[in-house]
Structures are given as structure tokens and as C-alpha cells.
Image 1 (spheres, rainbow over the protein chains, first blue to last red):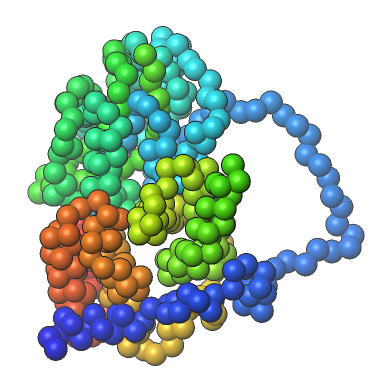
Image 2 (cartoon, rainbow over the protein chains, first blue to last red):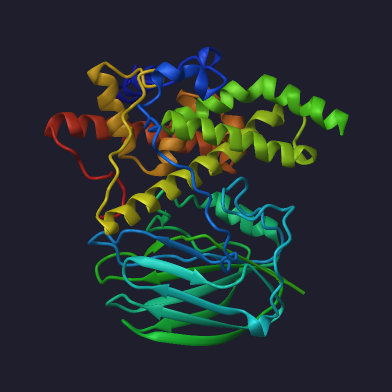
Length: 231
Length: 180
């Protein structure tokens, strides 16, 4: 047995759940294993929160900037079904009706302040011109590259091919998307803002936002803004 | 509708524990159970799209993979927000019921695996822990069987290098093949 195979055999033995058959079906059934939970004090009162107007649909997320990180990737998938990431918790349920915004009303801002990336915009827009504002808070230029896929299957295949992992990071040698057209580019200087009015035909868009540090390959982080554009 | 329910019941009986095990191998218990439940919630919503027969389990694993990935990302974001807010919740302790890694060598090999790329980790786990044949792994990862063979082979080599490197140095080594 080679050294690799021995290590692999050790990894096989290190399986945290070697026998699924003995797993309790409910978490409650493993109560002794649960972490200590806060016990409710008898003096505690229950107050129902007053209902407020539903907030505007907005997605925001953040990621750390490691010292050596020099880029991030933003994915905007524009097109058909919302089940782009099957099973993802904050993906819209296919059964839910989204509010349709006319393209010209679609106020979309992508902000990166060096620590937080925020997308502010509707999830469903009609085909037409959409104004995108990209605010680059980095101390280096960033480029948004818009790839357009003709169908969801092609984009799904691309996303399945490229697993950005927990940190949404793409490998430095990530090949360019296949079966896609390079539709637009936006280059934004360090600390600058750029506004682009783009005609968005129906389809699926993958927008990579990449920066390059001299001496390194492009680095990229993939985010999950999902926008549907309907004809 | 009755047939859908019967099919879902059968699906649950056949595969719930396998999906739960998949999730628990990648999450802590609370998140693992939540992820498994979410997988079956999605399966129920998409019962009409489920492949028949042997395709069921790979389909569920694909969903589970995305659910777990999403969950980790959410947790990471939450921790980052808390970090900025100045209140970092302590990470959950490993559950003694599911984490049976007690031997130091197991811990070392798991630490070494954790330093691999996400792709390497997943192909190793699917092969070693889920025990799936390469054809099913190729379905889950969306690549050819030959690519799975190659990925797994390379992942084994990198795992051994990570482990031996860690043993030699006695300290954490940089993520092999990863960005700085």
C-alpha cells in the first residue's frame, strides 16, 4: 500500500458518522447530546413584535479581505428559474411570486467598501435597459465582466463546474465560463464609482468582478445575487 | 397527490439517514439536522423532478451539497458581522455523539484534509465517507468519471502531502495549491 493509500485509509476510518443507521431521526432524540440551552426564566415576558412594513427586497453579504486577496467575484444570474442554486435557503421559492420591476425602474447598486459587498436591487426585472452602479471601495481598480448564458442549463453547468466553496473563492486558474458570451465590461478605478446603463436581454448573466495584484493571478469571489429578467 | 406522498415517504425511508449522515459529516449537529430537513423539504417541492431508481440518492446529495454550502456561507457571514460588531459567539463545541474522532491520528488527518481545496475535500468525502462509486460521484460533481478518478487520485496525493508536511513541521502548513 502506498503512502497516499495509507493516509486515505486513515481518512476513511476518520469518518465522523460511520454508520448512518444508528443516527436518530430527530435532533430531539439526541437530547443528551445537545448543547446547553438557555432556560427560560419564569419572570421573562413574551412580547409580540409590532408588525412593520415588509422591507424592500435586498441582499447583502460580506466577506473578509485577506491581506493577499486582490479581487472578488460577483455573480449576477439574470434569467429564468430562480432555482439556480437548488435548495439554497435564501433563493426565492419557485412557488413564490416576485414583484416585477420594469427595467428602467430597476435601481441596482453594487457596492464594495473593502469589507462588505452589497447588492441593492430587485430580483425580477423586465427586459430592457438596467442601470447598474458599481461603487468600488478597494484601493485598486476592479473590473466587472458580464457573461451571458443563453439558457439556464449552461449557467447551471458552469456553476456546477466551478465550486467557489465556502469563501466563494474561485481558484486562480479558473477557466473562463464556457458557452457564454462576453457581453459587457465595467472597469472601476480604485475608490471610484461607475454607472452603466446596460441593455439586458432575457438570459442568464454571470458577472465576475476581478482585481489583479501584480505578481499574482486574478483572484475572485463569487456572490449570489440572482436576478430574473423576463421578456 | 397521493402517489406523490407515497413516493416521498418511500424516498424519506430509503435515504433520510444517508442524507443526514452526509450533512452531519460536514456540519455540527444542529445545522446538520436542519440541512437534512431542508433537503427533504426541497425534495417534496420538486417531487415531480426527482429521478427514478438509482438516480434518487445522487440527486439528494447534489441538493444536500448546495444546502450545506449555503449554510456554511451564511454562518461565515454571520460570524463576520458579529466580528465587526465586536461580539463573536464562541464556536460550537464538537458533538460527542457524531464526532467520534478521538484518536490523535484521526484529528491530524482531518486537519490535513481541511487544508485542502473545497473540491478536493468533497471528492475525498464522497468516496471515503459516503462510499459512493465514481459514477455516482461524477453525477454529483457534474463531471466525467475519468475526471473523478483523476481528482480523487490527486486529492489523495495532496492529502498525504498535507499530513506529512504537518507532521514534519509540527505546525500548520499553507493550504496546498491554494491562493496565498
